[in-house]
Length: 124
Image 1 (tube, rainbow, N blue to C red):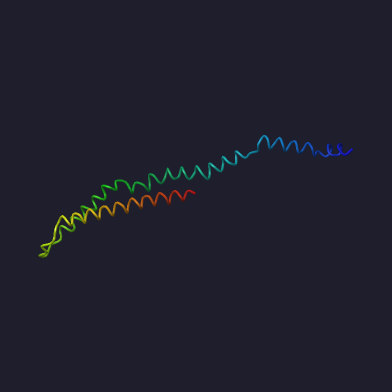
Image 2: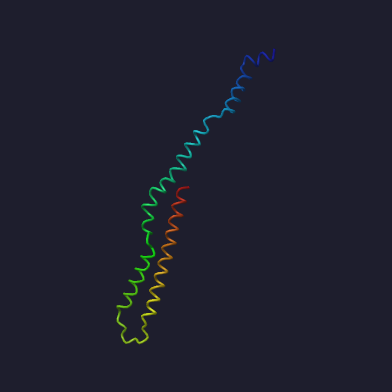
């Protein structure tokens, strides 16, 4: 009698349906695909599409620009009058210009890396 009551209520059959659905899998893959497409792939595509053509070109040819910084500094120092200073040496000024160029280059490389790191963390 008890067995017939459970069979009429549909209790064993409903559990069988749930078990089949669990084995078969639900729409979890569709949810995950939507999440991956929206939250993971989208920022990567935007990073590639906008960062590389818009942000990174400002950091191209840093070595040439560093040489220009050194040359500009050297010309500025070299064009100033010595005013009777016999210790004024253009070789020392050239070294100072080179040091300024190296400092500028290192600063720009660090800035470029910081920008990339910030953009990357903005994707998360």
